[in-house]
Image (cartoon, rainbow, N blue to C red; front, side, top):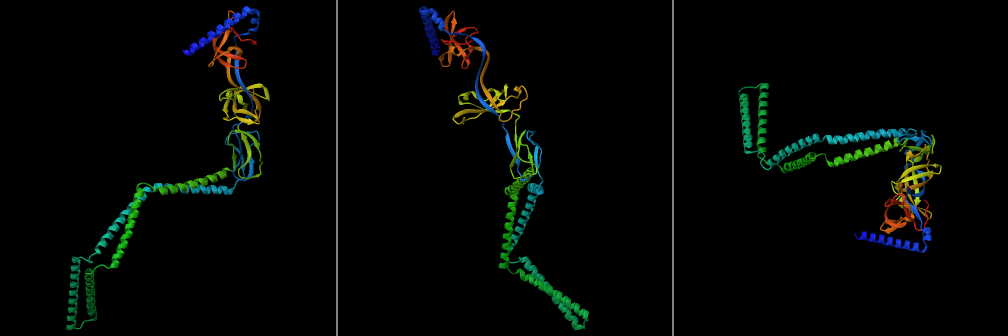
Length: 472
């Protein structure tokens, strides 16, 4: 509210001062004042704010390419000026059998490594089942060994076995005695034939063998195991315990999945095989030169039959489908070089045609050439603005106007008519019944000669310009 009264006060003071000034001057010398006071009528017209600079045609894609493999050029399929599509074959080297063999070798190697890795993942269930069986069998064997080891702490046989072997011995001994008595009785009463004698002696020998066996078993049961037997049994138990532990660890690992270390190892082998195959494929692909972009062949620096080394550039291709200008403006016009601003371009070679475009990028730093500093950016031309087909070769020079603002069929007054009041506000003196009256106006675009009036004036109204004469 205070600011409002302040502006009104200034307007009243300026109005009163102007009134008394003109009145006083009219009383002193009416005719000379009228001659010195200059005016201009509010009119309609166009106002365009521009910043001028220079530019040249460039491309955003300009690539030098060559074979990645050394060899002899067999064929070049393009010539300078040809338009090619991305992926087109441009040239080819002679075939190399060793590269083909290496490619097949690496393909086979990769298949084997992938199959090995897949088997590792797919055989988990069968490996777990096998490990579980081995674990249970090892446990059973260990229990048997522990039972046998416990028996080594006592006499070899229990009392029931001692008594049984002793009874077997006595029985066998009685049988021997009866056979011997029978043999003696027969031999005493008559002469025995050789077959009878031999049979009787064989029966006695067989019975005596059973006596010896029964006696050995009886005596064996009465003894205790030796230290050597105990040590051997302890060693067998230790071996079996380690086996049980190993199979238990195997089962536990398989139950949670494939061993992570095995997975990492197999993955590394597959990755290594893939890398080797990629190298082999690159070597084969290096025999052909493929267009990396859609563009125009700018230059060819080799011929068929020529031997070249690795990564030797022989073809230059550039994208000319988007006409781009590299533009330079004086650093004082930096505020006019804004992405999206329209441009008007006149080429030196086509000075009767106006091309239009837009600023698409602005370099974030100024460019220095000698002692002169420029603002730098890129402008993309609008192909629809070309009145006829134009060939715009790279490096073609042009004059460029960047349009910072444009207003057509708008109200205009001479720049000298504006009276700045501060804080971005303006007023003009309007002649009302021959008397200058101060009026607030809203100002739009301005250039060196004119100002756009958005509100506050009408066409045909007369405004003062001080003592400066303006051309209508």
